[in-house]
Image (cartoon, rainbow, N blue to C red):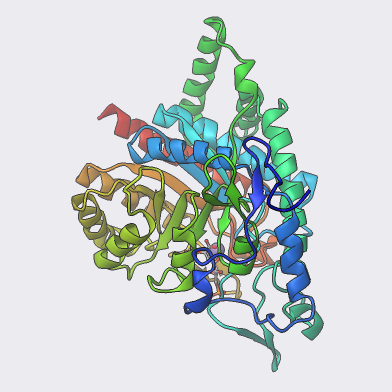
Length: 463
Ligand SMILES: O=C[C@H](O)[C@H](O)COP(=O)(O)O
Ligand SMILES: C=C(OP(=O)(O)O)C(=O)O
Ligand SMILES: [Mn+2]
């Protein structure tokens, strides 16, 4: 069958043309944080291989997510987005994926109760392989090599061979994302996500005396589930849950190659994930990332750091959400606990006054990174929670909706962030620090955060 006559199946997606003046406009713009691999002998073959592979997500699912995020932007749902700073190829095991999904589901139950509204569950998963870095190089014992930029670009081991940028990794990232997403779909659709099991996993967390402060809330959730059961609630329907995949759209080679024209609407969708965000280091208005993401239909996030001016935020809205479509644009603020109460109000005020309806989400991780005395990149649980509290205070005082939480977390018992009720100490880092980039909340710290945020949402609802 000739290319022109090939009719797409209803609702399926077909590969776009090799070049497209709109989707390829970014190629003529300045671009930061990209690998140096254009001249590599495997570059073209890797890109065309990605271009011929099936989409990882279906455009219809992306539309559903946009509707869910629109509800959150209107104060009727709450977003929970979490996962590794940097996923790794080796880390895509059944155990690690299931414990991360499990932890997100556990957090979501606690948050749903506190918020009394739906919680949109989203992993920094199945594609979170590319990392922007502050420096191009890393020096150890007098040897300088290219910095680790995520498994999609190079490897973590400190050897010249591993640190070389290798475009074949693009295809490996696609394959790993595909396997990860397959397992996520199986878990969340196949009975693993049953509300009653998720709730029973939380009993394990409550068995730790360090968490006694959360007993009342845990008891209330328990009673609510028993009450639902007694009323004959349809627990069959609660055996499945929606779960969306997201990552930073950093490598435009990868994102462009997975962009497809949706046969239902004729619109381009970046099918590498449901939700994509632009990082703090690549959100320049006239640069490639903003241009490319302005042209795809997916819901888009933008990280906003402490130096964001209101004019920057307004210009990003104009470019990324010209039709002011609720659910299209999420601002993920990462100000730092020290700054949030001072810097966030002006931004929120000016954006609200402009009439735009964005979803405001807090990332309490990236503005609170410090180096421990023994040399590890870390974050203090108290600083992280202080930023979350500041985020709630600012939105409460302005009458706007604190719509979600974006966290670097894992389901494993690692030691990377300091503190928590069952405190992690820096002496544990040598044995239990596993992250190849930023420090993540471990399983217990993640659940503790969910209980604290749930309490804040509950008091907000009672006011
Ligand atoms: O995840 C975020 C960034 O990639 C990371 O914070 C950069 O950190 P660096 O300063 O170690 O490069
Ligand atoms: C790079 C990240 O964040 P930011 O762009 O906010 O620094 C990240 O989310 O890992
Ligand atoms: Mn990070």
